[in-house]
Image 1 (cartoon, rainbow, N blue to C red):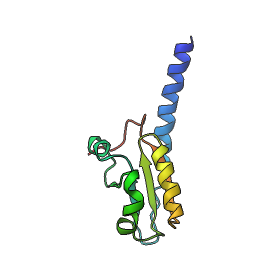
Image 2 (cartoon, one colour; image 1 turned 45 degrees about the vertical axis):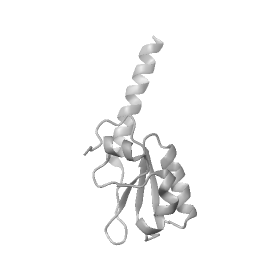
Image 3 (tube, rainbow, N blue to C red; image 1 turned 120 degrees about the horizontal axis):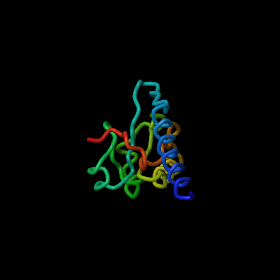
Image 4 (cartoon, rainbow, N blue to C red; image 1 turned 135 degrees about the horizontal axis):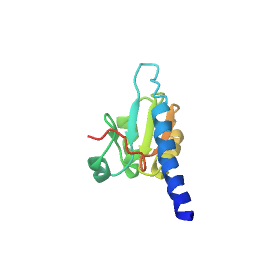
Length: 116
């Protein structure tokens, strides 16, 4: 019986994650654009990523942010595999003065992400 409860809970979490993603408001910044920032490794990015995403691995973000994300008020959506690195990136970017960043969390368990 417990096995069925765990399976049902897992299925519910996957569906809830997908519904949340579909309802996510990817509103654009003042200039009509946003950046979709992937903070995973290059290998993870090569395996699958969201169409249009920019890769800056979390361990390189502090050194590359100024050059690759020059506008501190630009709308930036951050994601990673599980949500841990995207939370770290959110904190880091806010600490660097970025004011319009959002953490999308992780992509695990969401099977309908666009892959390229």
